[in-house]
Image (spheres, rainbow, N blue to C red):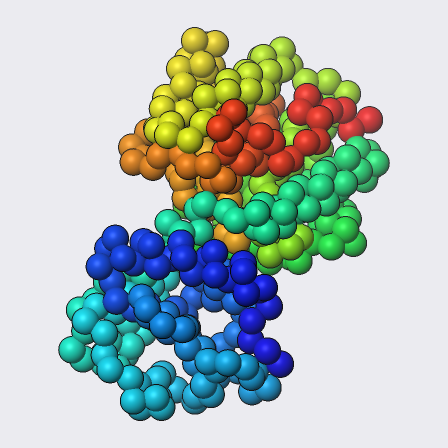
Length: 389
């Protein structure tokens, strides 16, 4: 079993990006153990490590599967064998993934390189992954098409008297049949979610521990987010934000539905969400400050008299958009204190949402690619409020 599933040209592009940032930060080598980063560099997930020097070929230290072969592959049982197996000269600076590795893991890996200065590999990999290659963009485009197929079926999945949980189960079933991998990768260890959010009525106004645009009580305190068994009733909004991972690369899309009727304030807020997305799509060119997009979105919500409900009601999210790719919250971050600058071929999700008391959450979310002409959508389900009946 060959370790590399990427074509050599594609891997070369990715390595060039990573090494360019390593060179800027004066990092001599990275030791990669995070699954998302291993997938980025090889096209697969395996148990083990990638040693990536600034110069020279990567070395793949593999624990499992034991059938893994190929150039640069070294079988190991424990990380201490990394140095001894090849007689490695310790680099002056070694980058480890400080954002995802535990303290004990970092300490153990550092003992392999006792003379090396520690640097942050997470920062390097996040920056490299933020700008997508053509192959990555194609995977995201395919995920967007498949997610659109599922969303267009949602009105046919509704039955009178359904709860939010029952509707989510039907949407998850359609997603899996369409090819959804089920894996919902979120960077870091302080946010969790299963397959996505279906929020009905005032459950959308229940605060959660996570910095999500929307909340929800959840079905159990062990996962306090999302649907809680609310019955879907006339006058309530039904916000759907479900898993778009069909290729190892995700799209993020939200659409809002209702049964029979929905109030004028909710309709106004939903139209404002669409208007914000269209305005930010015009502004989102390479070189644009990410925080400027947030400021424009907040300004439009305030001018519409909707700021009280913007990005939450009882508890507000601290952003209006985020990068998307292998994980659901990559760079750049569209937030008021963000220092990120948009680059061509960034992929970002914009989600200017509103929570209207006694009605629920309204608004949309789309995934876009940054181009010289602005943001181009990769999710194309109709954006208007849609009746389930």
